[in-house]
Image (cartoon, rainbow, N blue to C red):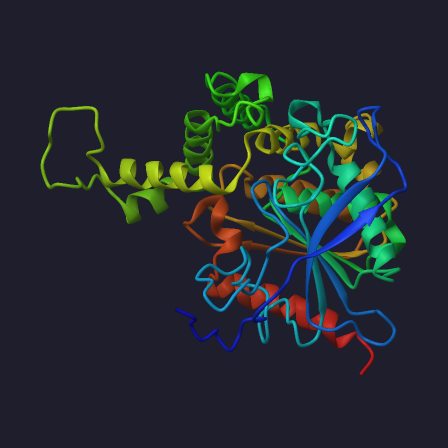
Length: 382
């Protein structure tokens, strides 16, 4: 049954496809001769194209950041809490663009799309892509849309890493950089988590070295375990205790290995639902892009030197309970920017939700985020 859409939603949206024939040279040394990018837009581009906002998605995100795909759709875009009329990223003031990155599994060229050489899905033959590759392809999409400079580039987690790369690679093409719950590189612990995820996927008997499409199977066991592990790292201990505690599903111990605790049931549900909407080869690619991101490496590990050429004003936000991308990592970014006398605002939000806090409409978070975005809107021509 159709349902009435919320008044503060962008409403019904339709994904679009941009096809590119100009070859894209990748960091890994390989080249994509042609590729597609699937994207959505919300709001209206103003006369001088100065109100455009780019949203960069995180590991399991995609182009569907806000709104609904049909009147029957019960699940809005992944950042519905922040995008829409009157929300921090106000669709009545801004023209908002979000795309599914290369290597994704929601329509952009990636492992589950046809390899033009063989006609079969790319599978594991799809090249490893980096954050720099994504930013280059996003810049080409901006060119296609007639956007020479973004009012802001915004992202959380892996999306925030893309924002940093934008500011480094195309300093004149964004006026503001909004980096939320991100880091200048991954810690060894984070890389370790990603490796366990990859091993869970690659050791699934149905993985077939990444050629599972041809066998018409899905490495569902590996995907479930990968998502369950990932989900644990996105939540804080406080959040899990508040949500589940040690609550038993049936109110008693059954002395077995089936689901007994509510938290077990929740994690299994998260794993099973993820299998239906995500691709194992894409998961591998996204974790590698995370691992490889380290813009300071070209400057002997000096992040201040890496950010010396940025021109954008920065808003950096972190969350106190985020142990995957801890506040101290955001403060590294802030310090490096201040070392170069850059303009930067920083907010450390008190929240017990863990890394997932960047997706949740926490009042203090929405207030400071909204305040910064209104500053950007105030700069636009009336």
